[in-house]
Length: 228
Image 1: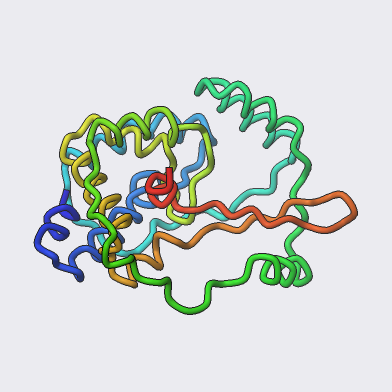
Image 2: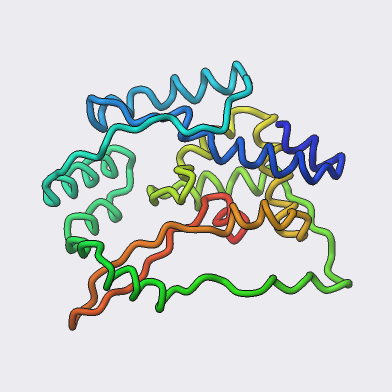
């Protein structure tokens, strides 16, 4: 993977560039198409496999998306439950059916989210001088992806999920690239710009008893992988 070579060469600009390309991959490989969830599911394996084989450059623009159609919340829960059951996530599917509707997004909700989950201030502290340099074991990372990261959870801002990362494990170059990315995250080698991309999250408001809301942050899957 190109990121790994940039990391080995200590090419900070190259690390940022190739990491951004990695984060853009779901938007390019999995554009929203008419035909619903079933059509997208059928296309996942063929699209990802094609891109991994071609390894061609792509531009920074996101694929144009169709406007989201209004849907019935109950039908959406049933559809997600069905998809989770087909993927083998029975417990998560059962919890999906009992989930309450999300609150409507308005100025009041946005202000509450900002108060409960404020943006980070300042820069993170550096690693201690005596901190050991960590190396990532390929077999251990593969096991973590297969048994921990691949759990049916939603993707973060980029759209990467544990299932999509799991699909990369069949390609040895991709595995080496994942090891390099996780090692750079844990050892504090990432440039500040790259860190900003990996630590962002999607914030979702959830209703609490009494009328208040709870913010749920869905982080980038690669950040989750490094945190396991």
